[in-house]
Length: 109
Image (tube, rainbow, N blue to C red; front, side):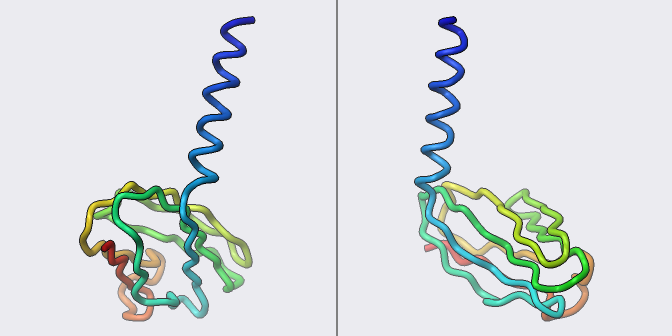
């Protein structure tokens, strides 16, 4: 019973930390990101909502951030980040990464 309570307390703490994260939105439409440059605060946990408005799947990928997430068409994916250090972090829509519109930058200040 004590083990179950300990697991429940840890799960609740994780949910609270996730809920406390700042939330930002990045949209994909016609294989292009909007905004192309997203400014995020340094030193905070971030909940990045990646909204894919296209009917086809898209993949958010950032090698500098060590994150990739496939987002089915007409749906939203969540990418958890941070806390991040100040800097610039490139990202792409991997399925179309050679197209300039499918590239962007997260600027952490």
